[in-house]
Image: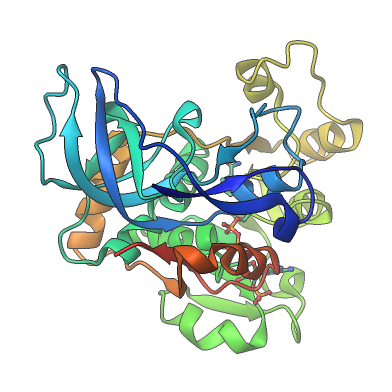
Length: 327
Ligand SMILES: NC(=O)c1ccc[n+]([C@@H]2O[C@H](COP(=O)([O-])OP(=O)(O)OC[C@H]3O[C@@H](n4cnc5c(N)ncnc54)[C@H](OP(=O)(O)O)[C@@H]3O)[C@@H](O)[C@H]2O)c1
């Protein structure tokens, strides 16, 4: 079968190769999925670039990708929750990474039936970004009437987070560049801030929550615009101490600058490192079927053009999700 593989660390063009490899075999708790679509995420190209080498060690060549939708074509002896022919979607666990391929073995505990009112391409874009947004927003207890700024409302995570926060009854501010303003407004955000022409800190302040999807100075600057006792939830900033311990960093201490900002604002600060979760995939499917969340697909590529797809995603300009279709 064909699979897009990381063959060496470095530039995306040299680091990826479309290879012919053996079809995977399944364990007793796995389903074998014929992949119909796989979505791309920044973690994938960060792995190609070698930026996550210390956290995730790969034996190269290694098939790329964490998100898929497809059809169950085989199941292990212990699989009770799926039948052959079921249409599923999944963010596969790390040890089963490799969704940009014709077939993938997936632990059935991490899959769910795909929402039945959307295409395979749309469904494949939901797991990693949807789970990330839900886990990051629930970690700081988002609730009705919370005033929240979600950075990068046009990104994969941001476009889901805006819709999820609105479904929870929050008052949502989000940032994007000029050409994305109109369609991001249509996601339901109360105020879309064009970061090319407006200063987000002047418009969104005294907030209950900032969702930091950008990192670097954006993480620190979030404390300027939350109210006393506000919450900052990040997916790219430094870990909070509790999360660091869960990630195995036993001696980790918060950077001094961050510790001071948290103390001065009596703030809550949390990093989310997304975990695959089938119950939350079912929740996402229900929200999509109820039309509370709509999947946002930017470009769809063929498997043969997978390297171009990753180069486009890595440009940082994707409007929603970038997908590889194998249908
Ligand atoms: N911790 C975790 O578990 C976890 C999980 C998922 C993702 N992440 C990380 O979270 C980040 C976001 O992921 P993603 O999938 O949403 O990325 P993405 O889809 O590639 O984000 C692209 C979007 O970012 C927007 N953007 C870029 N610079 C911006 C700025 N200064 N202000 C506002 N918007 C800006 C772009 O909009 P414009 O073109 O309009 O600028 C574009 O629409 C990545 O670094 C990813 O690795 C972490």
